[in-house]
Length: 550
Image 1 (cartoon, one colour):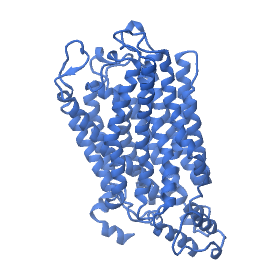
Image 2: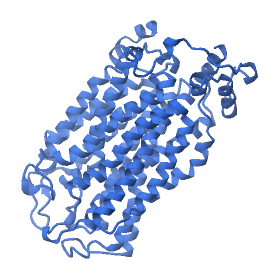
Image 3: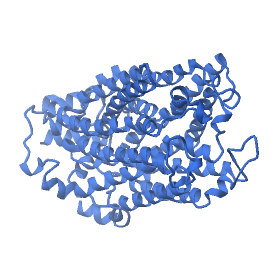
């Protein structure tokens, strides 16, 4: 037991060194691919509609039917949810490293396969695409618990939050890269195959060669992840898993000595390879009363806050093109060719991500170990609520009350579209300098090593359940109340204004549930895993009492 303690204490006190940054890059590249693949779909869904579902009788550009749009946008999220649960469990059963390679392999293969979706009819192409995107999501889902757990178990106590947040921050880079690739591909095809706007010539506005655009966008996202596969396979198993779960302290010491320079680190020769004995009361399972008593409220807190956050976060990301079109920041589809529409949607997504999403991630990296996880999460939910209400309540002031005269009869005039986009961007900033980052960090720190990956997977899966509600629900809810103004195939909804109010209320609930989540900043994983940490109210207002109790 003494050797086990020495190994874990040495890891907690280890100085930051080169291998930590290598681990961030290797784990982060998985998240780059995750975000690229999950969010690049929003840049090409309009194009898919034009290519495969154009009906000359409607007088409008083709659009995906409601069921197809929901499936294409949400099927990867369903796969992600399943992957988070399965690989979270697998990471605790067979080790983080062994499961880690499987997830990256799935992501690379299914990214390429998504671009190769085949079929002789629109339905068959969409079914094939959804099949591959489900398994793509399955691999992506596994990366959540495994990357977070690996990084938390490699990191020292002082910078653990920043390291985990840096891995997650690669999601922002992936979002920007997906939009940038779509811009570059669309621009290249626009120059090669220039076409008029839809209202000039509905048929010529969508060149047949545009079918290659969405395929290239999907496939190019696999390249960065594939390049890191070799290094991911060379990463040793985490010392905490080897020592605490596999009960091989000698192997843990040998593995860490290969990649980290640790002061006062016990020599592997001085450690007995015999398994460490454990008392039965410390071997409780996730379905036991002991787990429920020690960690049940904590798991409820991490799962519920992630669930509520993702309802709002994925609604905003996946359907920002629809929101920006409603307020006139993007031209009406009739005024653009198919390739011009891809370009403009991708440019808008890239600008919002660069100005708000990406900075939010890296501000979290800079501050999470200074001010703590819970204050950032509370701050994020609070300002997301404020800006959502600021967008929703005076929505018609921002959008404009009357449609512009011809030739822009589908756009609204008299509003303040730039102010709307600025406020909308602030919601993304405080999502990422806020709960989108902290809900990823905290579950990787709170739970015992033998259940850590499973509990993170459960929390992340709850988040994806919220994302699925956001992806499917917002699409329908945001439709106009006026039946003549809805998208083809959709029933009237509650409108953008009411949908934004609903998202603001969701953020309020997220803020309230944060109060049951313990602060993890500055505490060792072993202390946190005892289940003594209490909720945010005590963490914020009675931190001294908590430390005395622990």
